[in-house]
Length: 114
Length: 109
Image 1: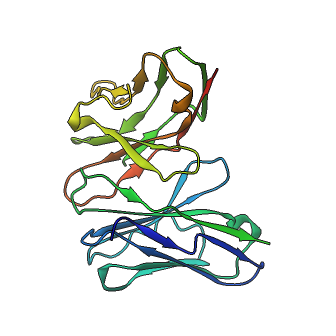
Image 2: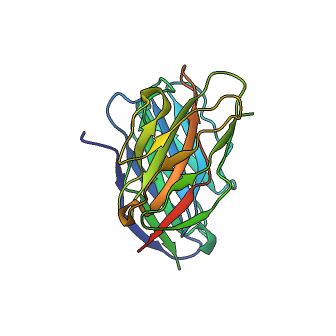
């Protein structure tokens, strides 16, 4: 594809509902990241996938958050029992395996929990 | 542990003034350093990387291993430079890229 694609672009959900956010990385990129960006704030690392290795989940803020990456490509970030403080822009990025390469970001999913 | 520190959350300068966005890192090996930028309503994107030793949009950054710094500089700021800037650290071999918390640059007319 032309770049990293995320869907939906915007999501409004009621407090307590579950949501799924999708990321389609650039074809061939083995590294995939999820970040959270709260209003006016910086990047908060959530989770990192690298090839077939076990994901680095050290940034997930609670057990309500989970992510999977099927077939080494598409990734889904799931937030269960959403809370108002989960409202943020969720960014996905992908890169080649080598650490010295550029990370390409998606446009983000703006999640609003009402 | 690897860490990237951007001490300023917000930096405000006047148009035409020099600007320096600070970045310090902690890593014992040979790091790969990057600066990323996010303009309003645009995707976060790479601005420059230290291995390229290039100037992009008038910005330069020099890796100082002695001070473990990678400050981003521009001699004359422009209004269109207003954006969020992130310093990032990685290393070769499939290790994750670590981002700093970001600095919002505001260039006033």
